[in-house]
Every structure is written in structure tokens, then in C-alpha cells.
Length: 384
Image (cartoon, rainbow, N blue to C red; front, side, top):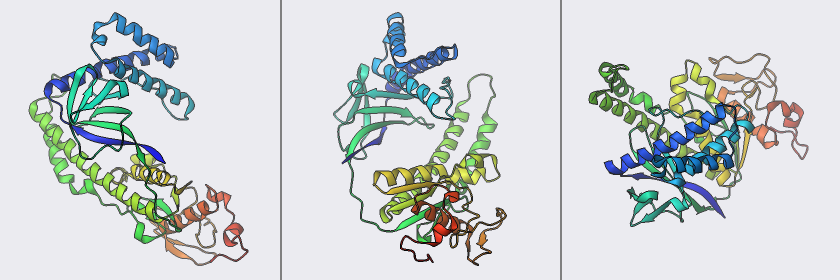
């Protein structure tokens, strides 16, 4: 059995090659913005109409013909897919314009648009870029995406097929409740993901770099100075370092959880509202959404049973007798106490056990599990 994954590598383009890549990106960005303009004028572009539009545009513009047709085709295909998803997925916005200064370059090539020769990535139009091969590719790549990050570093992301490694047999289950002070609280304290605060540790350096940026900023009149660009680069480097550390911790924790459990019950938590609260800084540093996606993706790839449970009433429900509290617990109350059976435990730990109990019974909401269903097992014995 095989799976489709991405392998990313650092690129080392020269200044001439980087200028060629940026010129290619501006051509693709121009086509994207023209497609958005057609859509805003009342038309609904499809893949066939976009292909005809590209053919006509290249026949009339020598500037477009200087670029790769493969990268331009992939840009329009990505736009058509994004437009289709905006009509089918609820809450998905329409594709927007890509400004020149606020959008990071991203080029995609199919198999006929790139090649690997002598350890170098050779793109269409003869663009050759050295690659830092940190690991071997498991198979021949089917496509590649060339992107530039906030620091100006270039990366190549190859789509390859990889054999699925069989996971060890596990017969235990686990429930996961998300939080801010503790990023993930589970039914087993040994699998908790604590909040490590990588951004908080380098906050002083970030403040110095941002103050330096503020002092050297010229406003909107003319280009920024070299000192401002160096300060902005230093601030971006610190942000990226903290984000990498947080992502690494999430990957290690998710692998540890998936390897040891067969059923993983995950709270279907949406941390978007935290951005408007007083906990926004800690929530952004904890990256709850990224940890949740990593856990779900690893569980699905490993063949584990992953259940998503809605967070409604998980904090107010007793994990012992499944009785619901009459009043909602405030954020300052960190201990749950049941008035019916006298059970007492940590607020998040109790919620994790409720999430696991709901998933074990094949439900996605607390309301779907009645108190009698929780107390009686399949063999008629009372659960304890």
C-alpha cells in the first residue's frame, strides 16, 4: 500500500536564477489576477475557458511566451479548483487578487515541466537550481512546487509516492481535549502536550528587532532602507524559528500518540475565536490548529480510527455518570465536580474522557449519548 506525500528541500538559486523565478511568478500572478477580474465582472470561468484564455494571451503577448506554459497552466488550474471549492464548500471565499508586495512567490510544475539532473532541479526554459538533498526521494516525483518564504529562502516541494509503514498493534484508546495553558490534555497524563512557549522565550529579541524596524521605517514614501530590511529579516527569522520548534513538537507528539493507540477521539475544536480574546498570543504560539491537523493526518495515514467530537457540553458533562451540570463552568474553575455521583477531576481531563466515551459509542456529539447508554455496557454490566 502506498500513500502520496510531499518531500521538501532547500534550494540555493543564484541571483540570476532568482530573478528568472520572480519574473515567472509575476507572469503567473498576472494570469491569476486577470482570471479574478473576469470572475468579478460577472463571468464564471471554467477550466476550458481559462485554457482558451491562456492560449489567446500567449499568442498576443511576447512577455507571456517568455515564461513556462506549464507553470501558467498550473496557476489557472489552481484558480479553477479554488473557484469551484468556493461554490461547494460553505464559508469558503472567492479567489482574491494577489498583490505584488503582499504575496509570496509560488510556482507549480507537472512532470513535463521539470527534471532532476546531476543533483540539480531543472525547470522549464532551462532554469537549473542546486538542491540541498537532506534525504533521498522514495520514488520519482510527479510534480514540484517552488516557493519562497518570508526570509527569502527558496524551497522545492516534491509530490511522491511512499510505501506505508505498518504500525504496531495497539488496543488502547485515547481522548484529546485542546486548551491554551496545556495545548492537549488527554485521558492518559503521559501523552499530554504541554504549552512550551517558544515565542515567549525569544520575546525580548523580537521586541528589539521590531523596535528597530519602527525606528528605521520611512513610511509609505519611497523604498525602505537597507537597515529596515535587515531588521525585518531578523524579526522574520525569530518568528520562523519559534514556528519550526512548535511544529516539530507537534509532529513528535502526534507520532507518539498514533503509535500507541487504536482509537483517537479528537475534540473538533476551532481556535479561530481565540484570535479576538485575551489569550490570542498564547493560542497563536501553541498552534492548536496545526497540532490538530497533524494528529488527524497521521492517524488516518496509519490506519487508526480517528473520531471528531463536537466540543459542546464536553466540559459540563461528567465522565463517570454522564450527568450534565446545570450551569456552565467559568474559565477560572479548573476542577470539575459532579453533584450526582461526587466524581471530581481536572476540568480538561474530564472533558477528554467525555470525548473518548462519545467516540467509543460511535457518536459525534454529547447529546447523542444518553446517560443510560453510558452506564450500561454491551454485555449488560454497569460501567465503572
